[in-house]
Image 1 (spheres, rainbow, N blue to C red):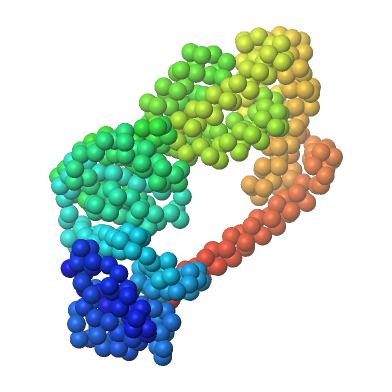
Image 2: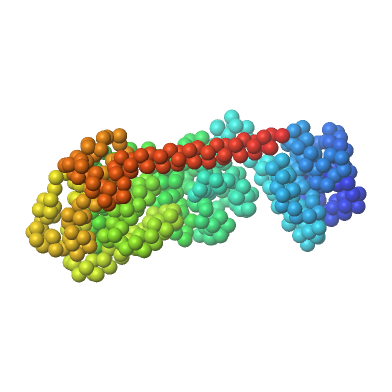
Length: 495
């Protein structure tokens, strides 16, 4: 039984609160009552207590001060705030001091009291079940066949949001690096609970059914999940059904060696964009990604490269902006598949608008890629036309229609972009950057750079360095502010 004490300066309120419920039916026994903080502390010294209902407006020692003293002297005792008014600031302060919940006395009626106390008792029992010796936790072996895995999609999400789930309250929740694991003591309907979890957790969490964990040490499971769970979920989640992961497959994924250097991945091969115009290539692209399962960050980088590399050529400014906003919401490979399909739609629309054949469109895409990779070399229109196996004259006409500018203008723009990157990313002198960007003459390069960028190369570099310093300072100040807040919170909780 949970032993509870009620602390309120009004006798009738104490008696009314105690008589409102059939406490033993909840596994609770009221072992005492007190009219102020000093009397409450005296009771705690004399008898074993698990739960303290505390009115904030106590004479002498306030409820806040009592909660602080109880936390210091009797850390195992939970405090629940009793308040007459739903004052958010006061309740928040009490919770920061260590209270586990609050009850608004003016809203407590026989109709809702059962639900409120039942929720409180369930939480206390859940917390008691999850308290364990750290040394024993490392040696713990999972006895159940399956478990539910909860993975937050943003780092600030905490396990408190999982308390509302009955599946969590009726089980044990184990913290593993960056996620939580809850063994299932009984079989569940994956289809049904998938909908319930989605409704309760929204899009901020990914949940999965982890199978095959019986007899596995928790410490080993945690290590395997840390290495493989997020990547596996990236490819398994995103649909309507609750994704299933098998522990043996996660072990294999965690132990998988990286592909040999030089072997092109599905994403590297996909840079030719053939998948945007040919159905067979699209299918091969998707199957290749599903088989190789590149890191989710690599998939996101691939999407950004498509936007940055083809805006203005294959995408209008509006289309690029819409795709950029959509990319921010992509959490799983299924989301990226939809996004990539939208990208192919824009490419195909562009081909139809230009009146080009599929073959010519792919040649022009290859030409742009060749120009970008050789922008710093001494290349001309004839070199590019020969590289993509087109006559120089036909290539010139098609390219101007495709790019909306002449070959020379496009190549010059690419070289200036290369120069801008080198100015910001290296300490090479301007004369060397001019050469590495395909401009033989430093004076001509500086003049051209100023005409198109609005400032000299040296000015552009200095401005970029200043912006980098400001960004670093802002980032440092933001981190210091967060650390300061965390330190303040730590002091509050420790007092």
